[in-house]
Structure formats: C-alpha cells, structure tokens
Image 1 (cartoon, one colour):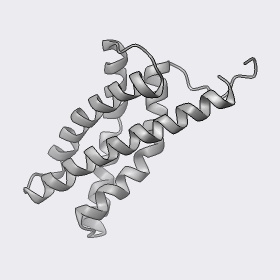
Image 2: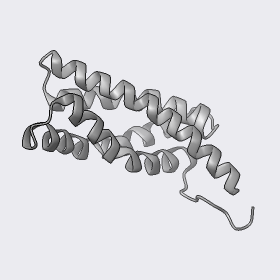
Image 3: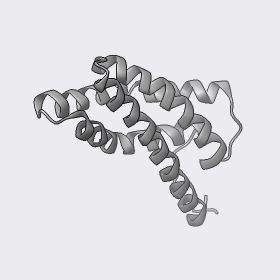
Length: 134
C-alpha cells in the first residue's frame, strides 16, 4: 500500500469512526437517561454500531466486498473490546463520577485505536500500513 492509499484509508476511517462514535454515544447517553444498565447499553451499542461500522468500513473505508465472514470477524474483534469499554464506562461513570455525557465520549476516545486495528485486521486480513514494494 502506498503512503497516499494509507492516508486515504485513514481519512475515511476517521469519518466512519466519527459517525460510529455519534451513534454509540447516542445509544449510551440516551439509554442511561432511560435508566438502562451499563452492560446492556454496551451490548446494544456493540451490535448496532458494530454492524453499521462494518458496512461502512467495508464499503467506504477499505472498498472491500461485504462478506459474512468479515462481518463476523469484525464483530468478534469488537466484542473483545466490550470488557474494556464496559470497564472504561464504569471507571469514568462510577469511580470518577462523571456524567454519562462525559464518560461515553472519553471511553470512545480510548477505544479508537483498538477499533482501528480491529477493522484493518477483520476486513483486509492484514495490518500493513506501508508496503516497501509499492
């Protein structure tokens, strides 16, 4: 992959990640206001946001075919982040006593790097930023 191609992936990734963050935070903040527990909110956010993010990353970010196997790899990779996301929400929301309107975006920022690596591995099946031969 050329440096320009990697930059285009990065720009498109950030656009999709931003949309995903808005959806995820809306679920978390709205659900918290409705009195839904943290773990249920994280699970709902994972399924909804994970599916939307996979479709957008496959189609727009990496321009790859939408395949059931890739979608499952993506969701499994994202699911491994659920304990971390839940702990971050718990840390920010309960331990640090931040309102969800602050805790959710803070957890989202921390999880950004993890999800970037997961998306590349699930959809492209590799994590090469630059190729010396291209």
